[in-house]
Length: 430
Image 1 (cartoon, rainbow, N blue to C red):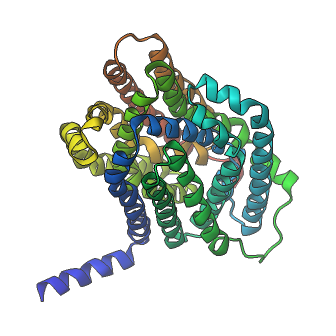
Image 2: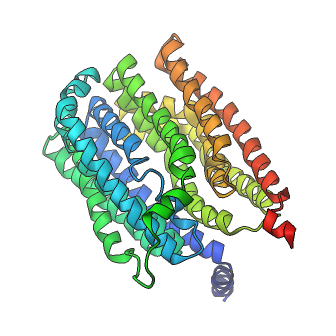
């Protein structure tokens, strides 16, 4: 039969190409994990008001910004060592740092949760800020386990974690929504889903005690660039996006922040769906690429992502406004309009997202840090200085950020080319 012959060819092709096999594994898990909240949003947007989504956006902005640096970026380095003993040492070090960060945050929030919630005009946020340390503890350990699984190429477990988190988060938000819980129901889901995901990862991803882990002091010295150079870059990126949410809430109010938040999350869905899988796999490939092949791999990565993103982002650009009004309800039409305006920025972000790991692998985090400072400052200054309504401001930001990301592609290719051309001293001596 022609159909069975074609299926056999596809199975054989997937079996012979490790990259395709791993990509499909992560893609399928990400697809389900993305589809669950998107499908549930049809109901959730009718159970919760835009202002509720605004409060959720404020809380997740605070937690996400801190979670980025919870392990001081040593969790990102778990993929890099040649020896498993060194990688296990990084797992242990990262876990200790995450725990310390969570404890410090809890102590800081005891006196500051009230003033922060008042400054953000979101009193419903205050009780959840007391629990932010617990959320950081969960999210930080999830990222540690994900990095270990990526090192071991255990992509099926990574996919299972994403799906379980989506089910737990969305299920909690739906149940709370029908109970009329308001913003606390949305925020509560961000605890339940990740907690379930962490329980799964703790069983599947705990490093095997085959060799003694490396000493902590040696790892702190060996990977000092992670907190010193990569850390500020990651923190700046987190402050950029989360700062945008905070400033929109302060300038335009929580209801318009809720509209922007739904637009951002929905437009990001195809980006996260495909690029989330690609980024994990590309990072592993970049980390094992020999000199002479880095620039070619970086260019192939960017061009492949550009082709993959054309159709979904074109559809969003032309159809988002009526689609949002139809799917989520008429009160969310503005979110659809904002989604259309964000497309140029997020399409370029889709292309460049996997390239960020190039700077880690070739140890040129300084270049990435310099770019990140500019990339953070532009949208925040635009929000503070630009005049007009939210549509005009979002349009200006989207165009500015798309232009900056074109520059980022050039920088990634430049550092990759320099790395390819550089001959280490040990190799030159031979």
